[in-house]
Image (cartoon, rainbow, N blue to C red; front, side, top):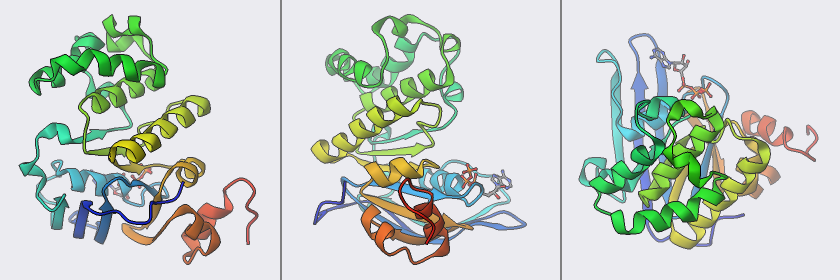
Length: 255
Ligand SMILES: Nc1ncnc2c1ncn2[C@@H]1O[C@H](COP(=O)(O)OP(=O)(O)OP(=O)(O)O)[C@@H](O)[C@H]1O
């Protein structure tokens, strides 16, 4: 799916984001602009800086000796001016994001209770459970009962129930089998199309990024070296790094 012709609003902007440890620069002067309603995949080899960049966007704490420069804006404003529900991250390791002593039902309903959306909660859960391949009875179980892939889906469900404006996904579907993975990415793609949710997805899943995302950025050594729609990158990859990703797609021989 390609990006619609015009996106009217910018959902996420990074201006000159750099993140440095005392020894090296992990993210180098990144400028990124993601319009509202875009499903943006950030590809890059392991260690290229994708997760560090995402943490920087989210304003997560780094060691005090690290240096951060740059500005991040959501819809033109700092993140601190938004209710937390509007910007929902989902990380690769779901175990860390669930209280092990709470049933999933409690973990799912807690943010909504805080956001006072109890009325729509039940209908939303019932809408998303089958799409995510989850079962009603699972709601009353503890996180330790589930596989990594099942918990990833619950983490995604919890984020979706908040009806965020922006979803930031860090390898959030990495433990899913290919069929579920496709179904969920297709549902996310629909969500951005119908409701204008903006999604930034850090992933190694090159094939799905080219299939479901409206735009793709390629990160190499802490920089976004190339961006484009899937068909632009397929047709005319400028950077060697992009060429390698394109060449790994089914039906694309190395050129
Ligand atoms: N706490 C830390 N201290 C020092 N270096 C770190 C720390 N966290 C990450 N790094 C380094 O930052 C670089 C970027 O790591 P990051 O996790 O952002 O990459 P990534 O592209 O998300 O990788 P992957 O795809 O494997 O998850 C790597 O060289 C990594 O070793």
